[in-house]
Amino acid sequence: MCREVSLTVLMLLLIGGCQGDKSGMTDAELERVALTQRIELVEAKGGLVLVVGGETVTSYEVIESSAELFRPLARVSELEQFKAQATERLEEVVMGRISNVLLYQHAKKQERTNDEALEAMAESEYRKFVLEHGGDEFKADEQLKSVGMNRESFKEKQKRSILIQFYLRKKSSTERPITYRELIKCYDEMKDEYFSIEAEITFRLIDIQPGRFEVTDPNQDRNELARNLAGELIERLRSGEDFGELAKQSSHGHRKDFGGLWPSVHPESLAAPYNLIAAAVEGIEPGQIAGPVVTQWHLFIIKLEARQLAGYEPFENVQEQVERKIILDRRNGVFDQLNAKLKEEEAGVARTDEFVDFCLEKIYQMGRQQP
Image (cartoon, rainbow, N blue to C red):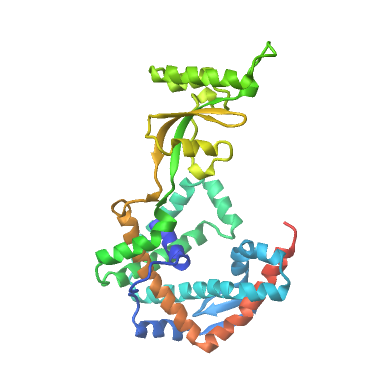
């Protein structure tokens, strides 16, 4: 899971969620946040800037954060076609940034914060970031520099995220308890993407390849030699000899040095002629042996080590993840409602049109350049 403090806001902006009640700001609060702040568009050196309640959203930061996302589309499209396909998505990015600014400003007004505690939490997030880079502050600072940040701007961003997170938690504290019905509904909606378990088999294989037999008598038949060896090995296995040791001694397969043990695989992923292995072990239990399975160039003797049937992680094992998802979705509702209020204001949206169009043209130009 993502770190709660530093990444939750990003998740709120990006993930879609299980459908259900989304408690958050009241309509009156949303009106105050969305409508009391003016969104102004101004020109800046080399670009445009949206001024939102005294704070800025620059075309540079939007372009830099979105260029790679849109590069594949830019490479295969004419400009107008590119704009037609990319505009809505980039508008969502810009609206998300505006919403973040507005929500932060609202949270800052509503919450009485301990500046020292906030600084300590931001410093803690920076220390975690350093640890992710092997504890090397120089490497961490260089990584920040590569994305146009420094230590102080990183910490300032963390403070904003922490304050928004605190505010959202407070707004969510009065929500009704999560019911069992909601949990099951969300689990059913999540399970295909997050909790599915693919079918797998684990097996050992003695792969006898007639073409690998050396013969000195022209009357000898390599296929007959292979069948005889297979029969002998099966008798030895029935008498209790170890499958892995016999595979090391007698298999011609590429896994012989591992006692014929293959990594776990999805049965349907096995290519011919190994796909016959999946069919051969279908009717046996782990620990049992199948074969010989005869193909044109191989004789297979298989020992099934383990079988995992397709299915899902039981609800009981993932209940906490489902609960967290529902909580995130409810908090995400604050952003959804705020964006909706912003879009209702034609003047506010109109101010972003030119900004979005400018960003799209720059992103398109960057995408058309050779990397």
